[in-house]
Length: 342
Image 1 (cartoon, rainbow, N blue to C red):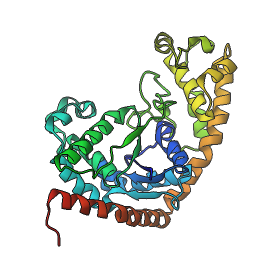
Image 2: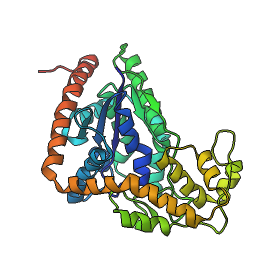
Image 3: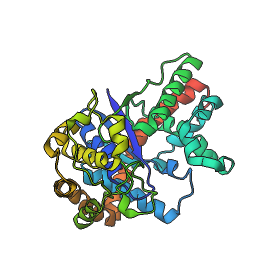
Image 4: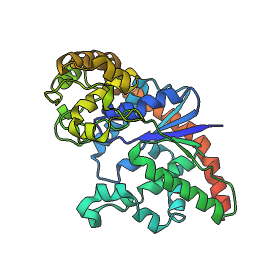
């Protein structure tokens, strides 16, 4: 059985990068895998969260899954904190993982910055909790973006070490699923920076719950340059923009990449279609495409986010189904480690 586990943090302002890099892929994966999709609220609190906003954002992520087309009857959708196996297995894996492994995690260094001594312990051991999320369900495949590749490698290392330490074959070694196109969607204001929910200007990103008028306005105001759009000659042998071309025109290639991803077309085709045209014509086409794809999702997200009973019911049902899978695996871990149980 091929099983997917993945999750999204409930920290607010889900945007186009989250949709193209993760959530849209969740929808396509449900056809071929046993899929478990989590709202990872335990991960969210590794940095301080306003409790009321955390609840609201948990519902918002759930609404995004549903609005994008994740089917709660075919998949399991739940929030992490409702299934205690995540936290309990994370502690056991804390005792398997090595300090040197965590010291190499670049994302902690980036997030903690110069205030490492003031960062939470949770932020430091975040990768071990991610490993527990995956291994608690014996997931065989994990969709990951560039920023999570290192953490999945750690998960694989932890699974191998646990199996070796206890002379067992309890955990499968999960395989990464990497979706190359548009996994890095950049800011609409600065093509050299990744689109981010934390950037001060809301005009820098297209939020998943933006209405069609706001989507159109953000694209019209997106930063460009004065030159005409390039042709396919700027691509390398892999079909990606050459580094010199990308460095010279990051905003242009960001918008072109967004168009290609939304249209599910190779970038080369888009470049051939728009070669020599100005941004005025191109932005009109991009607006039409983005409004058609994202407009219905945003409207449905708003409707679902307002229906707390329906969303909470889906999360409760998902948590029960998730626990039914995780609890026997955790019992197997307990027996393997040598814990006495009631």
